[in-house]
Image (cartoon, rainbow, N blue to C red; front, side, top):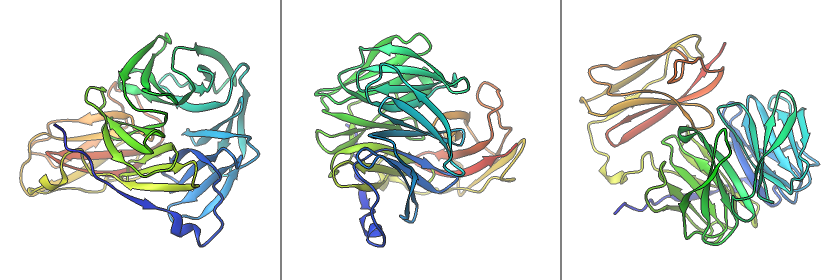
Length: 364
């Protein structure tokens, strides 16, 4: 039997005492690593609020009626509201994208797949496929993904979209790409599911209004879900800060963002014994075209590997079975030897039961 995960919940409420709390029924949430801030969509406030790591709030985008979800992609924050999707430049908040989805009812979850298309989920069980460059859309899925679907995430290893819905005993649905075939990935006894996110190890996290809790599924949805955190109040949007190993949870009814400190690995933390291993900064950083990742250890440990992730939590490269070496060189290419785009990436060292994560920047 797996050990249940115990985590502590840290509330941002004390920070709001210093200034007005701008959150009003917070929904979707995304973390901006370059700006060290996160964006929260507010259903009743009709705004997107930017919150720094220190808790300072400001309005990033407004006049978005029933603002539901948001997603960062290529330095643009895409936001769903009503039948619309708008995009705002991270650098200054200017509007750079807008599209109306005919036949949609309350656009909500967003995902970007490896094909470069933006997929948008709506409450009337439809998924729209958007060509960002051409500012065009098409109906991709019509029904079969549960009643009142809420959120969606891209499952890169299986090249599919994962969907959860606000219903009893909710199933997790998979939508294969590029054909759009729908299947049930997992049946659950969880009720009223909302937010979806993924960590650096490929585990999926789901928020349940039925128990006001967040649960974790393994990457293949084989084992029963593990309880990660509880005591929330209408957990709507969830997001993981991979660098700091933090889970953010927006509370729809209390206008508070909870920060949950996650364990560094899924194993019992009491078992983390020496030998110790340390992950150093990469050099150069920023880099182009390649960088060296360094690590050190007090004793040779088996099953040591370094994995590289993009901002969406997708693994783009892995260096396995690192024995008798203390560094690896990454040339900015993914597992298919394809050059990746400029931006922020994370490299995670995992050795035995220990794991450490750092950030690096590829700048072309």
